[in-house]
Length: 69
Image 1 (cartoon, rainbow, N blue to C red):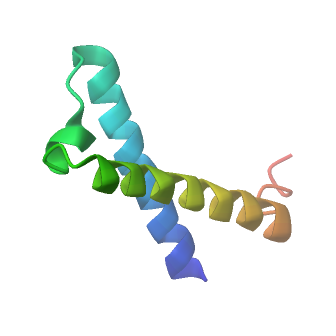
Image 2 (tube, rainbow, N blue to C red):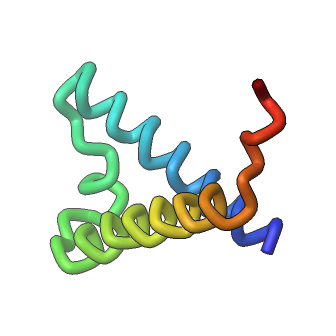
Image 3 (cartoon, rainbow, N blue to C red):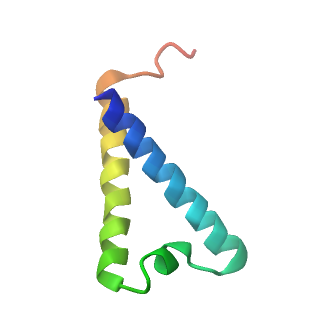
């Protein structure tokens, strides 16, 4: 479970870096990596949604932030 959480966190960090490159330069790095294949592009974008859903579940189920206050 810890490995899955780290993997999902890594996926979201990579997508965030790609989004920053797109926002700052207008170059879509993910579309370049997928060589313009829109089906693969959309599949990788859906992977970001799954990773975000997993992290949301992890935060709600295990409450890792409750000792911060």
